[in-house]
Image 1 (cartoon, rainbow, N blue to C red):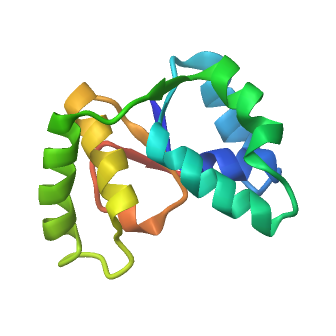
Image 2: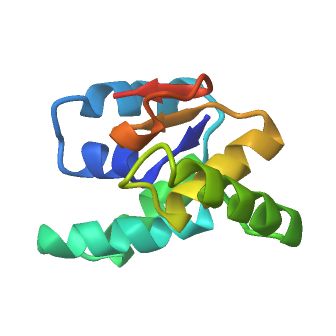
Amino acid sequence: MLLDSSAWIELFIKGEKWQRVRDVIRGEECQISIVSLAEISDKLLHYGHSLYEVLPAIESNCDIVEIDKETSMVAGGLNFRRKKISKGWGMMDSFVLATAMLNDWRILTKDKDFADLDNVEML
């Protein structure tokens, strides 16, 4: 399962669905796209925290997936198409989706821009 940044934020702030994220981390092999680290860093700063505080928890519970040329190419095409479907769609979302698609992983997210996709579990 590829955990989107919103899933990690849900866990770290103990949001409404944090226990589902915890259960996935405990029960499944988990991954995170490297681009999600930037989003997590940004969001945590809004809560007065730093990515460095939670990075050990992320690294000990999932594999960080790097971006390669194929993922970048697929993400570009996805971004072009998804922006026509979802106004809030961004390139970071495209990298997450491309990473999941190329590896046949499901995505765990709170981001409603992913809600229409088959390989997504919404929190």
